[in-house]
Length: 208
Image (cartoon, rainbow, N blue to C red; front, side):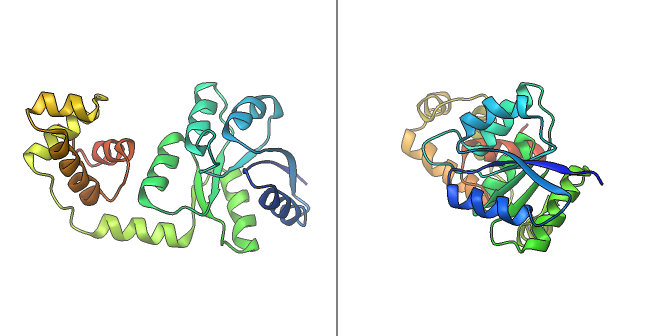
């Protein structure tokens, strides 16, 4: 029997303890390491060589889980990462998957769903909690609300890393107007961060 070696990353000890105990009820699952922050995970996981990482996203004041995934990928660590979190916004999902996560599981998932997700992720199959998958499908089925020409122009400049002040100067508008445009863009794309807006727009060919 092949044992799947799992590494847990979560800033809450009670979550890590409970998840470790749950996974330990399965003969083919074994927790081989834990980290309480994204920084610790990025430093320890390369030498721990697990088969799977279960990663929380928002871990207090430390590194965001998506950034930890990116750092692991930049270091050449290709171990599959299954996000295990309470956050289910479109922006969180997009940010995690863009960083390189193989799946996105919510913490209210049942034991069988968790076990199945771990095994599927290790087998190379993408995993999404049903509620997350359903919302993404609904979003894809909804007609896309088109960005205006000015919004598309602003989004293109945003992709270049411009600040609000720089965007205002480039477009000859005030920072307040920039913020208004960004609010409309976020609403139309179903996100709430700059990076997520750029990522979604690129996927939809929304940036010219």
